[in-house]
Each structure stands twice: as structure tokens, then as C-alpha cells.
Image 1: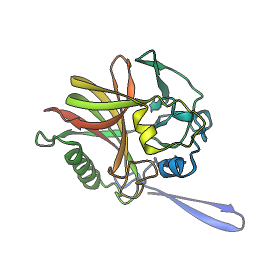
Image 2: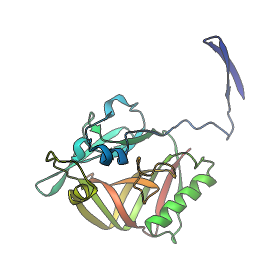
Image 3: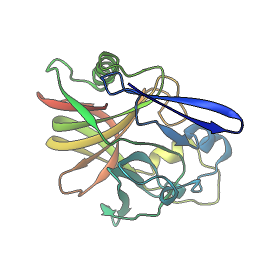
Image 4: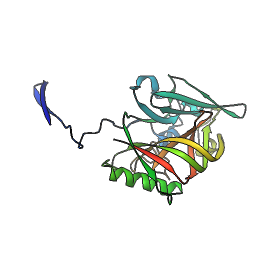
Length: 238
């Protein structure tokens, strides 16, 4: 254990650095904007400029400004998906903006195998919370996670809203989604779990906001529902 001190505005602050296993988490979840505000105000402009966030080991998800696509960031690499002529197009855009956004900078992850009995989205959310608690994460606060492996089925969408001058409604938003399904596919997911952010960065029926992609990055999309495979790997921040 090491001690150091410095003076700031007349206060002496003692810093304690632990070299053992009880280290303070080096990551913290940040978020901006809110899903419910998008519907209440009808404002879908970009409020979070991705380029202004710390980019090192950045993981993040959120809808593109004007609901024109999805933004997924994996270890600092920004992927933006849009729909063009009925197909998903993915580009690497370092400077998009999001309607609402959630992120964390995570350098180190620990992994565990998801039990075979965990199959549905609800079961997976429950296991993610349990595994986080077992790993010493404070689950009363939001935290990021990742998943890799072969999924039995994943239903996903990419926003493809076309503003028409009228106020956004949930019905219009849902109708504008480009929806698809991946079956028996090897996929990668990044998500954020929270019991306290329904209507902020998670849907009011969910405890997590998850995006999915494949190895080729042929699509990056928002996960609507899923059936897990027999052997998935869960990654949680150290």
C-alpha cells in the first residue's frame, strides 16, 4: 500500500494506492441524453459528440443523430451503421453525434463462460448481474459488459428514421426500424447494464442496452431479443 498527498484549494487530499486485489475500479460509466426525453420533446438532434469523449479503450452504444442509424464503439474503434437501399452499410466515422449515449473506458476485462442453461434475454440479464456481483462490481451502479460466441438467434434493428416535420412518436420510431435476424452465428456484443436507467439509456422493459456485430463488421445493430448459444463468453470489467 502506498500513500501520497497533494494540496488542492487549501485541502490536503490523501491518495491510497493498493497493489493487492482490492483495487479501485479504473472505469466509470458515463451517459448523456435520454430515450424518454427524445419522445417527450421530439428532439432527435445529436447532443453527444463522440470525438469529444476520451477515446482510449472506449466502449459505447447509442442511436445516431436524427435516428439515422446506430453507433457502436469497440475499444476506441467507431462504427456507424445506416440503411441504404434496403441494406445495412457500416462505416468507420470518428466524429458522429448521438441522440443519447452511454459509454465507458475499460482497459482490462475478466471473462467467464455463460452457463448452458442461460438461454433467453431475461436469463442472460440476470446472469450478467449475478456474475458482476460475484466479481465485486457494485451493481447498484451501471456497468459495461461484452459477449462473444455463437448465438442461436438474435433479433436486431438499425434505426432508419426519416424526419417529416411532425413530432416523433413511438409508433413512428418503431415503424422506421430496419429489422433483421441472425441465426446460429458467431457474434460479438457490447452492452450496458443498469437497474436505474430505464427510459434513459435502456428501454423501459429492459435492464440493458446491447449492440451486436459480426466478425466482418458487416452490420452493427441494436439487440431486440436473443436466444443464447451453448457456449458464450461474458466479459466484465476488472
